Every structure is written in structure tokens, then in C-alpha cells.
Image (cartoon, rainbow, N blue to C red; front, side, top):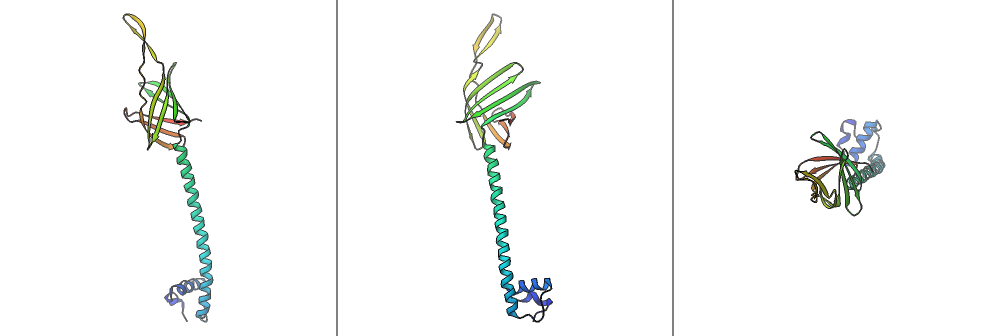
Length: 190
């Protein structure tokens, strides 16, 4: 019969059972190979059930994690809603409000004090790049004061722009103007 010193010298099935039994203090000198084999079968079935339970738990946790990550990613990639941001340029404060609606349409206003501009149009968001196409804008005329007096001149259509979009979470995005290199952080408010 095996003693504690050589209990792990048996074949692989008997070795694990013998070592487990020796560890638990259950291995006795009078155990037969048939007894050890029966214990091995019993422990093997128990270990198999435990491994299956652990595998199911790990798989369930992994699937849940994937759903959460996918939901957050999908929410982050969804531009629909009302977004606000602000910045200061040469000491002057500007407040930006962008509303994105179905059909890849947007409307953006920029306000500084009592002055406001607006533009609206369509956009495409692909691979982290937001490309905007302006369809309508206001004001369409600007007052020009010169030596002859004052008069209105037409305002050129503003460029839509191309922006690199980084979502820091589902309700915060940073737009970096690819051409002008400026950045603006927007917060989703609706």
C-alpha cells in the first residue's frame, strides 16, 4: 500500500485522489486499489460538476460584461440628443449648443453675450470622424460700416467642418477640428 511519502507516485487519476485523501487525512494503509478507484470516480464526478458550475459562472460573467461594454459603446456612438459646450477665445466666452436628430441632421448655435449664430445641416460619423455639411445658416447678412455709411453684405456659407470625435463616456464627447486643430468638449444634456 502507498504511504504519504509516495501517494503522488500513482497514475494520474489515483495520484490526485490519493493526494487529496492524504491531505484530508483520509488515506489509510488498509485501503485497496478498488476503494481508491471508487473515491477517484466519486471525486472526479464532483470535481466535474464544480468545474462546470465555475465555467458557467465565468461564461455568464463574461457575457454580461460584453453586453454592458457593447451597450456603453453603442450609447457613446449615438449622437442623438442635445449637447452643450463652451470655450473662451481671446477672453470672450462662447456657448455652443448642438441638437442632433434622426436622419443624421444637426443644428448648432453659438452664442456670445447677445450675439448668436446658427447653422444646420447633415452629418456623417464614420471611424471616429464627423463630417458636417451646412445646409442653412443665420445670419445671412452682416452690417458693414465704412466711410460711405453702413450697408448689409451677404454672409458666406460657413464651412461644415471635419472633426475627430472621442467619446470619453456615453454623455461626453470631444470634437477636434481636423483643419483648425481646436477642440471643444460637449456634454449631453438630453
